[in-house]
Length: 179
Image (cartoon, rainbow, N blue to C red):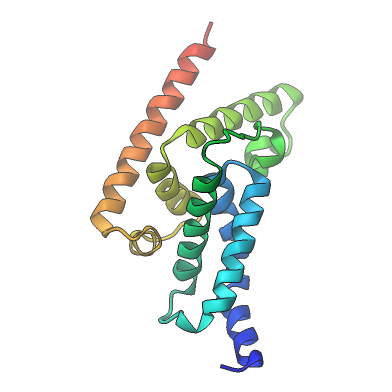
């Protein structure tokens, strides 16, 4: 594969999925800078191995590389305990504010979004990753299975468990918030 072919293949395979890759990395790493580093590492790996991508699902191939880069980075830094505090910058815009809401509604929506964000981040990695891939990236069970390298049935059970854990955590947070 010559340089022009490699560049064209990379543009077709990786570039359309960079936003999704960063989103996944952000949720897995819990740190925007580490997520950027992981995506950059994944993109470099994709450049080096783009000719290995076979079949129609380039997104699943690239997201699997991103996931592996995140796991490698997380394992490398695991003893340091460096977490980034949550702020509004990382909340989805539609959760942080809504047009026409007054200041009180915006504050309540922001607080709910922060609670959801914290609850998702507190899920174990195996549940958090399938939840993010399904609910935020809207990938199919088959695509998620290819990314995390597990059977579809395992994806379904992890997703069910993730939703259950998330619901319990949100319920507990809401119970504590009520005076």
